[in-house]
Each structure stands twice: as C-alpha cells, then as structure tokens.
Image 1 (cartoon, rainbow, N blue to C red):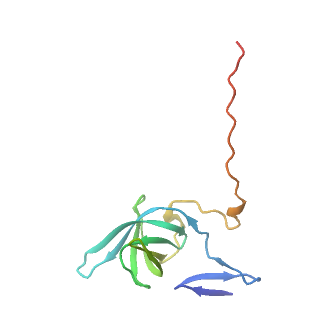
Image 2 (cartoon, helix red, strand yellow):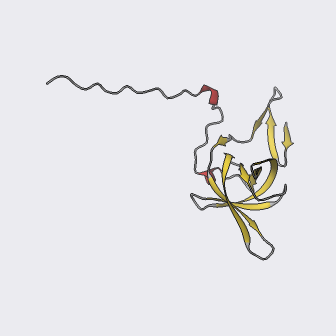
Image 3 (spheres, one colour):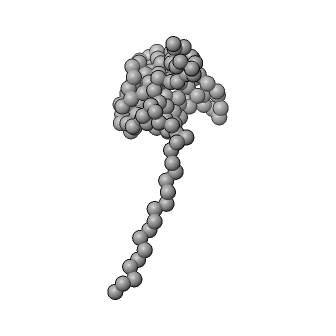
Length: 141
C-alpha cells in the first residue's frame, strides 16, 4: 500500500502500517544554483545550499518565491551537472528564505556525488569514533 504526501512524494506502508520513504535521505549542505526561466528568454539564478538530499531530489532554503508544481532547474555547483525539478512542497518562511522540496523529473542518485547509506542502516546504531592510541616513543638505545 502506498500514500501520496505533499505533492508527488510517495511513502510506502509496510504490513505494520508504518511508512518509509522511497530512498534514504541524507542531511547535508551541498552548494547548488537554482535557475528559473523568465518570460524574455533570460533566467533568474540563485545560489543556495541543500538541507537534505536523496535520489529523488532535495530540500533547500530559497529566497525566490516559488509555487507548488513550478518547473525549475538546479545545478550542482561542484560538478556543474544540471537537473530539471518540480516544486513539490513549500514549507516555512524564516529569515528571508523558504524551505522548498524539489523533486527530479527522474531519480538521479549520482547527481549529489555522495554515497547513500544502505536501506537497512540505522543512524542510532552508528558508533562514535574512538581516540586512537598514539605510539609511545621508544626508550631503547
């Protein structure tokens, strides 16, 4: 069973009724540019950062006002790769920016240039790094 939430974002329900996302989300700030076409064949471009990414898109904080369903283009500032996106969710306005959910026209997990954790990865189970012991200087002559 599946349900559609906030635009076309789909969650899958398991036999216990809980829901999970289609792909693993990763909280990471990746520099992007958002490009919107203008009526006179030019475009508006805004530099921004992601808040969360996954194989299907991202959540970003943007100053430009957008409408749900609007088609835009995002650019990964590090790789210069571009993706067409749709605005699927508009969140809170805070400090001059709005949280915006963007969905790729088709899944593109390699767009972010990161390795996603496996589906069975539980962040609560991860261990903090332990301090490595420094080798003691040798006292033999």
